[in-house]
Image 1 (cartoon, helix red, strand yellow):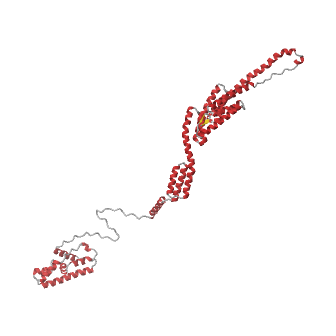
Image 2: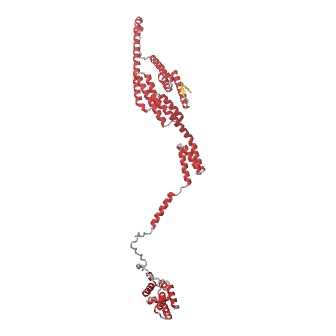
Image 3: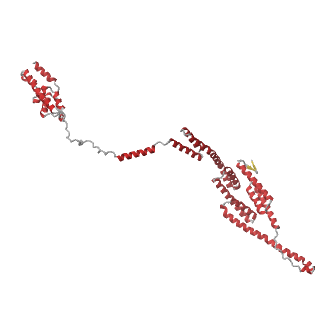
Length: 461
């Protein structure tokens, strides 16, 4: 009875045997060893014999002798365990025979262990052949070719170009370009910007030579730029006055103001244009006055206006000036012819009257006196009327010059006095003195206006 109880206890304490899965058929020798190790020797032997019960259970059921049943069970278990061990040792490939697998299944059935689900075996493939894709798996893109040497070369060239373009520039060259920029500012009279850039160069630690160049450029350009600024301001103030003078017809005043400005600040394109406009306006007015004098047959007036027009030296007045010259020539010819006719008539009548008066006395004279031939009448033109007329014209022109001088038109007075002294009465002291006086007053007026003062009543105030 004690042996029967021991066999029952051993049977209860034995662990369950797992059924060998199909994975155990893989080329590995560990599956058979694992199956043999999980079963007791008596259980494994009776599982191999194909019986569903162990000798201990049979002994309990049939009532056989316990000792004989124990001996038989031990022998059978040893025989079965030895077979499994030899099979495992002989075939390290790990495959279990069909009989052994059937025995395991029967033993697990007796012990109540469910059989394991067979695993799906994959297809056998040759070495080097890739596995076929599984059904329903995502398709993958084909493998790309390896990157060639030409691609690597192009990438290297591209990287080199990018580095060359993006590499940091030389700080010295950068500062030098900024110095040149500051010097350009001074040339454009942007002194404030140049000084701001100079302070920035000092903050960026420019060299002493570069800072010296910048300072010299600023110092050299500052006086000229300041003078240019003052000149622009003065021109802005003068321009409205010139426009007003042109509108009112005060051309002489506009010319004097412009001449004073040019003397102080110099000539430029704007002043040249205004000088041209003033001269053309003044010349047109002189031509109109000359035409009026020509209608009155006032030769002296025409000559004075023509002389003033010629001093302007403007090509725009050329056609009208040439026509005025021709008209003056015709007037001079007519004047000379009118002067010659009365003089010739007077010279012819004088000898005839003297001969008529001397006829009675000649009759009473002696014969030798008759034989003397009579002298032919001389065709002489007297200069007495011409001298008187020249003096009269000189006095008239001198009066006109005095009037121009009193009105402040010094240029007009100088022109009339010059005509009087050179064309009408050569060397007239009064005309020469008036011309010198007008020239002196004109110089003083220009000097006064250039200094910024006012010229009132022939004096600088």
